[in-house]
Length: 233
Length: 233
DNA sequence: ACTCATATTATGTGCAGACATATTATTATT
DNA sequence: AATAATAATATGTCTGCACATAATATGAGT
Image 1 (cartoon, chains in turn purple, green, cyan, blue):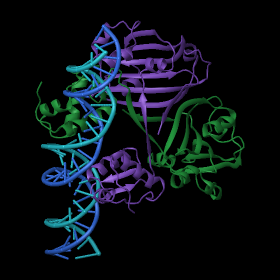
Image 2: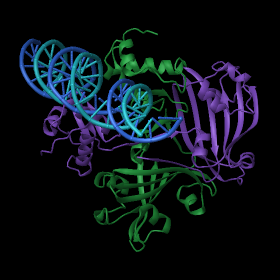
Image 3: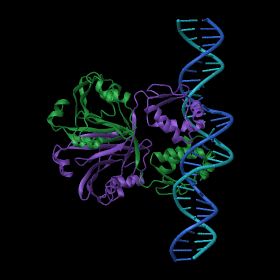
Image 4: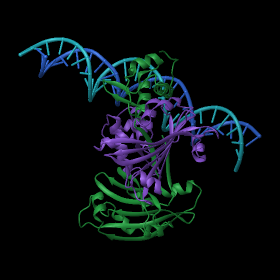
């Protein structure tokens, strides 16, 4: 098989995707090596490598030194999900953002949160419960624990005025995070906060962030009934 | 500021991340250009470019030709989410996978599905309802519509033996997809299928895939109560 | 036949130089 | 002062060459 000259890595990527989608290269097949493809496409090997890397990052190719490159047999397609800043998400849909602090105190976190945040049994953290609103209507409830040792300055922030997440984004950069998506049934308390009915199904994001080995914050965000989070592959 | 010589793009990436996290470069700041950083780090400009591209892909830098590279002011952190093959997900947790066809017929899809799949008003599609089980227990219910025009061969597949998703992965590669995550409240029917209680909150993934402009399939996957989907940033 | 050592190989990357491209800054003109 | 044209600039990429590295294949020895 020979092809017209491909001049850019995007051209190579398109050709490679075409061969995968047409099943010219079947799942599990070893594809020609970079040098041979470069020869066939009339471009540099580095250009082929650049293109194949992108296709592999999308999950469609498995690459190994010496072994070569195979079409993935069970492609685990990867979607890129943006972790939004709530204000941004609301404003991008042309709604007015507002915020309300429900409560804030220092306390010893419950066992599960402590384990997740890897804090000691007697270590106090800052608990912040807040509500984000879109056009004055409840959008997402936020239950957050912040590790005071990691971010002592948070204690001098007026959290009735400023939302904790935005302050943290500006002042406590994280290097890694765990995220979990799930569904819960609204109890009476959350139903009241979100203006939902008891037992409504609510979409939940649980997130914990670290700076190196130091936990910054663990947050549970419970979205209003009917919320969808969308992305593309 | 001058730094020890950095020999690899990963070293450059680490140094750059360090400067961002330490706020040496603040959100909104224009960072030194590639050539200057290359000079400072004692490496090639291409090496700096490679590293900065990775950091930008993670959402922490905004890059523009001529304008230069800025630290993102509201970093929209990007998580990579693997769209799993259910069998794989179950087996990777050391459970036995099994599958049951609930029903299958050709029919005109409901209005919402038709719109999502961009099918004509009289176009019939293949409807497949199925259940995936882990260790004999309901794991995820799948309601699927398949565009017969895109994949006519599906009509000759025995879907009581073979799960539609796996057949499609092998035989109908997709080039793009839309995915949506949400929560629903179990009605009596789904509660029975998933051995849940009526009104339980259930995590849902809705997905539509296309090959070019041709819709392949639209599927609603409703997970067992308590399901979490996890990833990392 | 099995095990170990060595050679080979395909991907991963660094480098220098050049060119491409989108964008901003500067200069010329009115 | 405003506008248009031109120049400069920083990112984006291609190339050829070389080296690095993980992994597989081959050959030698028992």
